[in-house]
Length: 603
Image (tube, rainbow, N blue to C red; front, side):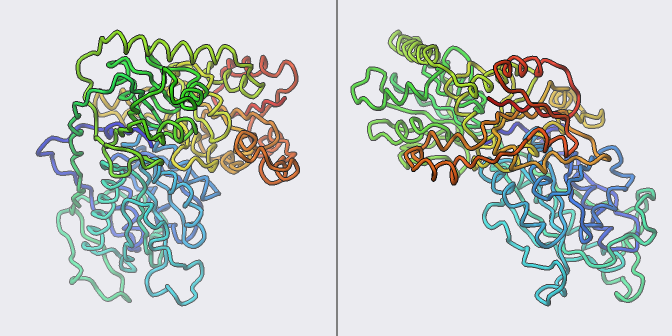
């Protein structure tokens, strides 16, 4: 679950000025004209980055990128692997959900490679616009090359899905262009709406797939007359496009008002759980009522005088004893908690603990099915100065801190803490789904910078690509993207972006490191804690499996030289190991760099 700020750009009033775009000039290809209209629409709505993989059926969308109307306003990032492209677009959306990333693929198996990113976007509520090129209707179910059933391929994981009919062969009609513009505007509104997530527009494209002149570089049309579909010549003849001057209306949806907070005084023995994407509201509520705050690393709430360090271990002890003096009677849940079994199972599944969930959408997280109440937002109310509440909070904080002080961190945990502590206020840390994020949940102090994680489905897919997309969007802030002071602040330069992952996660997305020589490379540090296998399984119930079974099928040692593999892909990579490895890691993190690099830390 991801917290989403309001979309960038000037706020819409009750009676906003109509937004329009010029109708494309005649180009000798209805597919290319439609593609031009699509990009003009998305750019007008605030899209600034797309990730695209090579393909022929999607070629009209490539030629349309040469349109002077969008010059300097839309940056394309080419990735040879569609899965990497999809997660790159997802990372772009994580940086600024109001300006979501777009991923473009050709037809066929390419569309299937996007599914993992679509699922992560769905479960993390991250906007993502998926454009898949497809054959026209006459080439379906007849054995045509690279033609499969793409309509509905992502099932109920998308907020909006449509199959846009192919425009006329030699020139798109007014109705076809209006349909494309309206459809993309509707998709954008669904992706960035009150229940944000992925959308899918399947684009049927008919030959010719290239502009008649071989390029799209003429001036935008400026005339005033349109040609209706009934005025067209037959398909076999050259069909002119709409004449100069037509403008197409782009529908904008005014964002709904923020939900009205509910006044609900918490129980004095309550705790506040801040899962992934909880945002600052969880911290504010806990501090207002002096309640213990159990905040995951990627919650956006990890800090302040209510935060409890070491809470996973402490909570396991508390919930194991029905008479423990710190046992909660109520849990107030923000975000999507997934990391700790003491939280998700022992606390939220306890029969004597009332669970209240704060979530404005219909897809609230309640894995234990014990929630008694769901509210869209909670009012802070008056500050709670009850002495018993304050004393109880201090007991929680003291006991948690003692557990952290008594711990003897492994070398992997010390490496993770070194990266955490190197993250400054302007920096961003992206965490993979491995043991490391759980190590930080138990041991890390307050977060200083922005911390993100792929906790929608908690998979290891596409983490390098996601972090790379985030870094690309963070770096790119042209002046035209900042029409007012509010937007300029949102796009202010940021510090370093770092990705912290285990070795299996790193290997799983090696293609995310492939950035061609013609592409802008992200300013990204990839830190890999390499213990040759999936350490997380040794901490689950599988640790009781036969050693041979555990090693081969769960921890899966790989024997790969990850730094060498990264160097082979063009990434500046080093490996530190031995007694001085952690010191070398700290020095490496302090060393300034502007490109893509990898630091591998071993035992």
